[in-house]
Length: 208
Ligand code: IMP
Image 1 (cartoon, protein in one colour):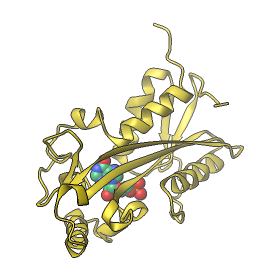
Image 2: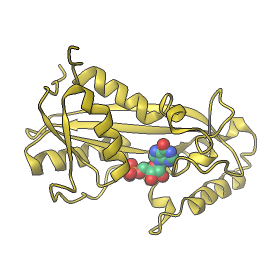
Image 3: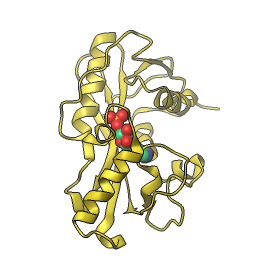
């Protein structure tokens, strides 16, 4: 049975990414939970050595929970391309290289798709996945996973969002994630879906 986060709890956000920390803070504030980031507590970032999103999310959340003595929430996410056997997957950030150049990362994906003659939408199927993990200092963990399916377009379109957003067109949409307003992306994104599962399982809405 899922352990709930009680109002008044301090939660460590197991991330050093200010954008992710802000998003998580906004999400949990209505539930009376306050968040502090791993960076603010001086907790290091562990190496992501697992081969699944859930595995890496678990590793990051456990590291923060054990270091701080507080419950911790992590996020691990990425793009999986069917024709590339699920690549870049857990290596999505690393495909952009040390300079975090996602124009280069998208070109790498496109080049491999072309080498596989993946030119029509059906052969360019892809999904974003996000795994959120809540870990407790005693080692208990729970993972919530969200996905959004679509296909990859070329050339990339739009300058909103981040990462691989400009080449991802969700099923039933005409705008890529790079062209969509963030509010629209948040109604359907992998991360929003994982958050919804986390909220339903671990947080109680406050009365009033
Ligand atoms: P993480 O910080 O190790 O979880 O790396 C996630 C990587 O996956 C990011 O650097 C992006 O490249 C990619 N990614 C995850 N979520 C999204 C998204 O919503 N849009 C675009 N790229 C994403």
